[in-house]
Image (cartoon, rainbow, N blue to C red; front, side, top):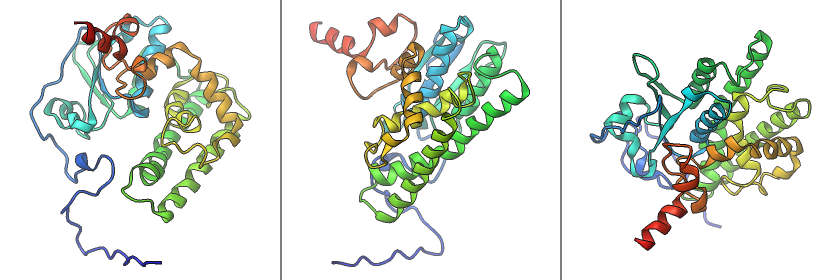
Length: 294
């Protein structure tokens, strides 16, 4: 059995080479734009710049839920930000989100456009703006926000920790995989215990807490991220699975999962969304078919 020399950190870290693994080409230790590129602006009050990752899906689910509930002011244009190609480092995107992460939203419904970045902030802004999917009583609101921020604080261990070392790192390393697998299973147990007593995450009411948590942990137990459901023994979290399946039946959730999606079956990809009819006419399978016949 060969031994690998232990890594000895230098006194001062320097960026000398790519770290390896998936997304290595876009990782860098500095902020700011890398190139000039203005963002497109559509006709609707809400302008979303995103990608159909779990963080992006949170916001498209919320917008679709608002529209389904009759809030026409939530009508939106969704523009694709291809993070693999570095779109998030364009000057226009950085103006909206100086952190260069999706999703980013411009609320143009008022006299002065409002920029919003960080998915939790966007969910909270929209919930408060439209008075929907957030409890109005003090206790219910506190519970909802506690779970919303639980997701924001917990998921980096799932994505940047477990997901990176299990699925994306250039090699499999036992220590970080074990460390983060333990934490992710603890998080699943937290959710499972909560959902043993409640229909939805924050109680009997469907809220932005569900919209924030479902795209990550629902996808995890259904083996839709990292292909790790068996490894994590996800089938044992019965209450999480029940909740995941129930939310997945909602039409706005199904639509939200399609928007800005650039992976998976072509019929489930609506890379840009500018009108409700786009779900019927502009999914990627139809676009590809039209190219073949033209």
